Image (cartoon, rainbow, N blue to C red; front, top):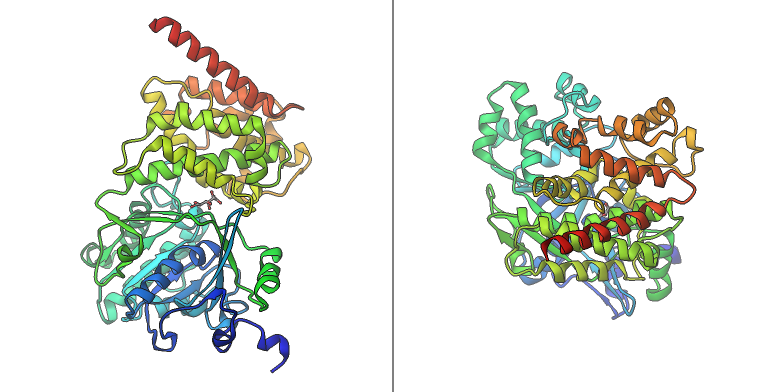
Length: 511
Ligand code: CS2
């Protein structure tokens, strides 16, 4: 064995690691698989896999995780070579804490064909499937939460149900195989940042199953649970600098390092089928209704991230930490959350929403977490409904102002428009609607009114009620106009001035 191989993380290195690196406190060799996870990215490694590792240390049981990727990257090259082991670093401005997480017992690459994934998901020893497949993985229409039957992967999978490639297609095929073989119940637990993620997952799986027409949907109704969950920890995509930092600080190589902040939270709807791990013993909260927690997290923390990310890119800033260090953006995001977002939230047991805003903004100021604005702006079309449009709808229903919340909506549009050909490809974007917005920009040119109107007409993102609302259209159009000018931050300054003037007017009227 070469020196490099000897110093690469894997089961044989566990005994030789520095004492400053925490190791699994259980016998990994005795760990058997009991659940699967779809989408083993940084977030899973920094969140659910860590909770499971905590649980295994506290109360050892058959809860090893089989990690499956149906999209790149290949797991065999990283976690696979390391026997599933990886380093989880927690960083804030003061400290760096390293721990080896041992809960992933096996990894399976299923990018070429669904067969390897189906083998795992249909196996009788798998009682639970968690997933982080990103917002777009559900193939739903963000504006309604229903399965998008025009989605090319869904069209493909309905025609070829035994060789699926979409998440709904793969899950339905796995359930079909479970029903035909052992019939054991299973919980499918979404850990993606979509509001009512369990409902959306149930919608897409059951709508697909109904089209199979084999009575499968009735079996699903009786044997499969789709709890909703709110998941939280900021875990940016791992960079080469993160990999290097492990080697520098602790003296070994690890290709699957993940770096996160100290804060973590997991609130899970108590609605399970069959056996489930007792994550509630290690900090997760089980509740009857996740909705108020989801609203709080997605509208406050994620709303702030999307705002800082898109406006940050337009202002030429690289990371969330740079955007929040900017006095104008910091004032803007704080006022937006306090004045417009907070009044849309329903009370959350044991949590003070105002304190939550301050805590969330504090988390975004953690200078050791280098979250790229472009990463957060990725797939913005799938994120703005739960982060911005839903609070806007609630405000409009209350007859309240939306002058601040409309700015990041225009920011999302400007982010995609500026990247289109007509505006000179200033940055590469990744969003399923990027092509559509670029085509709109090509047809409409620079006129903000025409641009905003054509984008708002995309009914899979903007529901018809919101799209027809004149206050919304006017606010977005005015912000978009400023954002496409030479001084994009004028939109931010103007909206703050206008909302302050409106507030003073209301105070004078009520005096
Ligand atoms: C981020 C989230 O990339 C993004 O969309 O806003 O991944 C965010 O960091 C997590 O939801 C925090 O829990």
